Amino acid sequence: MESTTSSIRKALSSDSLTANNTSNTNSTEQNNNTDKTTDSTAGNSDFSDYMLKALSVTEGQDVSEEELFAGLISQRLNAKSDEAAEYYQGELAKFKTSLARSDGYVPVEDAANEALKSAVEAGKISKEEAEQIKGEAFAAAQLDDNKDALYDNRGSAEDPTIAVSKMEAALLSMRTLVEQIESGEVKIDPRSLDLGSTGGSSSTSGGDPAKAPTGAQQMDGAGGFVWKPVSESNGKLAVLLPESFNGVLDHIEIMSADGMELTSVDYTKDYDDGRPLFRFDKAGEEYGDNIKVVAYKTDGETVSWDISNGAVRHD
Image (cartoon, rainbow, N blue to C red; front, side, top):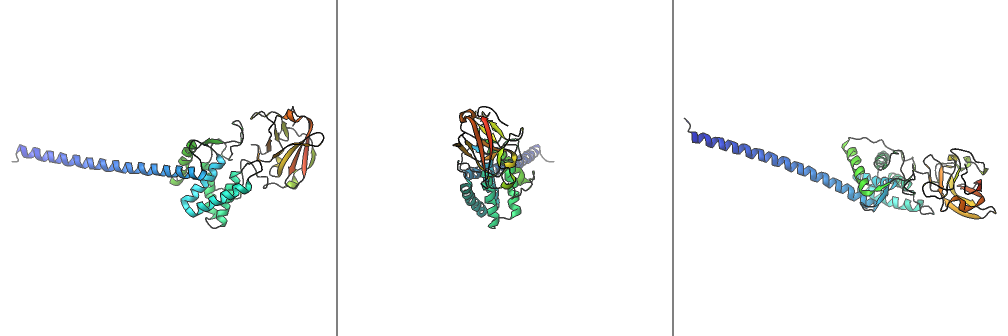
């Protein structure tokens, strides 16, 4: 018969072995979890570092949807090919310069789209891949409730065509969606390279100047021409033109009663309902009475509206 002492020794030995196995298992699971956490942290850091570098900003700076869109295209390209991303960045810089307007405004969405087209034309990426990347970048760049457009940072906080965020907050929302895309949890539809700017149309594309009216015009009521002497955004003059002039304008001028130019504003963007929007440096009353708004189309033709009293609304 086995002694009591021997039985106790075997039991202790068995318990020790079980404890060691449990300890080894827990240690392995802990190491695996640590590895996963490390990998996730590294991935988050890589994404953030790339976006900060691509946009040349810090986490505390404001960024617009258009800027995020341009940076995200580069990030998505880089995930496929370093060469494609570098080529795109070079083209983006070129288009930002060539598309810049006289008042300093840069249509970043248009520049990014043209740079992506160039990458396709240069054989750096296929058209199908580019359109998928564009769709993903467009979706991940959204900062507001309007998911069908990208807006810039021009205007006041009340301007419906401005969408900005601190880079730190933007990184979180972008990274979350990108991770869902990469895991297959979220499927984003491709976006055609033929689609241009969504937040405002370029004056050099989209419309046919010959189809827009010319000459002296009458006030046309709601949805048409508006002389708003004091806008809600900054208390200064805002002028809206009918949607038929979308994409066919170069600039507008305010002329005095004796035909002298009082001021001139280049076309920059459209209002959220599609009408071309022009903002001025003064309130409407400061331009006086019996004045004229003259719009210059891209084909050189002009169209005008008479303003009898600059201090009151005309539409």
